[in-house]
Image 1: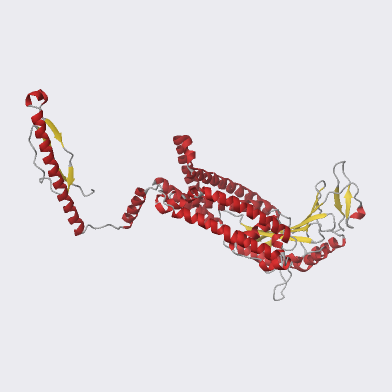
Image 2: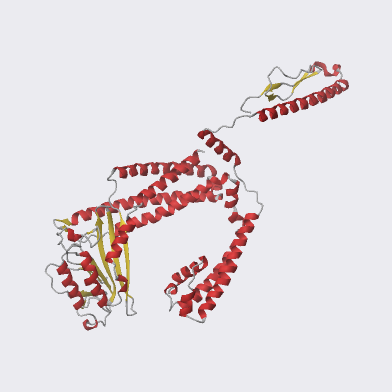
Length: 562
């Protein structure tokens, strides 16, 4: 019972910590930034469209100059992105990754602003001759890795002229592999930091492939009263974890190798290891957040944040913590099933995989082979015509959606009028109809099988009685129960009289067979029959039979607990 209580408290604390760490406004913040900054971003396909998008969408959003009613903004107000409540932390950063120049590469092969920077025998790199801008910082160059980074100016006019200079100098050209734009924001009302990362990939097919991600997370911790309550719960959770770990280690030492025979013990150890990972990642995230806040504080000047601050590491560790926490919450929730195994119905349900393991294994082999056949054929037939079949990963996902009931019949028919209907019909018959019905048949046969499942019924009755007693429910004894007790008492007395008569006859025969002289000094043989307690008063006892062997049968009143 103590183990059950500890596990329930441990899981409840884990649920509370997971919900407290999740900010309910993070989704709205991310959605607001994406809708304003990434407007028309997905339509970029050429370098000219990229420069036009920078001038028409990105720069006016990052550098607003007037309110909606035409009034001019103050300098600090211009740090806030257009139609948002978040201001920029430092300037945006452009980072270009270029192909390594070969030995035969000449200056005329690249754009007008690029030339090859000679190095040693094994390392050459690119150099970009940007037009002279007095208020623009120098590039962050990495010669041998061919990674060029620059920060956009803080002023709108200077930033616009700088984008025009990039366009005239052919900043994007055939040796460019990808261009990344990183922008950091902070919402003071929600205390949320956000990172907008835009990646434009030049895949070599003649068009640009834009991708973008927006991440919102929290860096400030343990500031308000609620945060200190969370800190206290974090400490309590850690103590409960240490108690459970000590009990589990003690059980392993006591049972030895027999401990590994139970799959529930393996699940318990996975839960403990996962919880230890969560605690470690939480500590690492806190350390990275502290260092990042220190860098943000150092970049703050008299007119706002002047230097770019890389928040990528803090965002990555925050996302890592949330993923690990979600996995551990799932595992600990599943581990609660080991507590409710006392129910016969639940015990039989948990025993289903063991009952149908042979049939299920054969089904999985057949289903895997059939699914791989449809994945390969679907990718080869529709990969060049449908985005959902563009690679093996998306093809697998699309076929899994078809198993769940989401179809793409019209798109298949448009992409391939001959093969599309054949593929769709064959998949629906073989997978959706036949294999799914085979699986349901295996499950139904396992459920209907008469299997004796071991379960702790006494534990269930004890828990139910304790729960009713805690709520104050007691069952009163009625007259029918008293009448039934009286009838049982009379039947017991009748059986005892019959037993006494049989003993008298047996003793008489023993007395005739074994004369008194042969008994010698053995004395009288005293045999005391078992004592039975009833609800009758103690004075109503059976008489003592005095023979050569004394047999005494006493009927004593029973206590209320019986």
